[in-house]
Image (cartoon, rainbow, N blue to C red; front, side):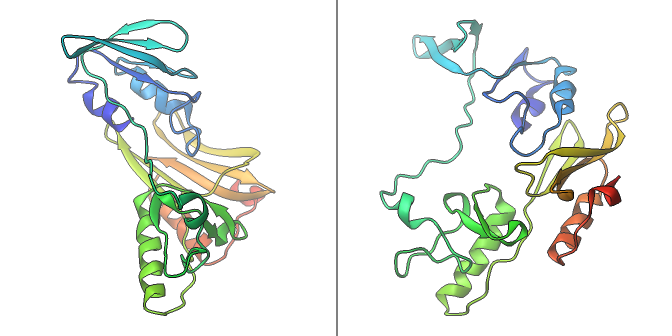
Length: 230
């Protein structure tokens, strides 16, 4: 999404192909992000995928979508995430609260690690963002020095799109409702993701420092009810 935003005023055309219904659907359920880029002549093919990339003389010429459509292309940028080749990844890179694995003297941190998140009752989660990599690295390093410090962090994600500040904090998987503040027309809002009648996560657009404030509250163990959010 950041690449599409950057190229929106530089390329003759920009097309984004994704398997989800909305950009950042796993974390930021904000259809407005799609609309913002569409206004900059970025075309989206959502709930779709790439079946084939065709070229000629060593240069890409077109992209075939899973639905059969064929799109002309001069440049293809592929965001495939991370992929590790470790044979022990499935068994070893499941960390406990000290970032140790089930293999002696092997520690796991970052995108390859599933770890117990205190915010959701120590449920094992896998979240790829460098804020968590930093937290993992610190705990792993202390563990290697035989200093048993349990991980205690609140996921925090941010980005900039078209000059707009976007923030997300918490862990909103399984949310059942959204409490919305602000205005999509003014490109300024705060959305609370509700689960079990409490705020599980929040997303903001040009509403700083609301998300950072929520991080502080969650880190201190404070909870916000749906009624309070409303």
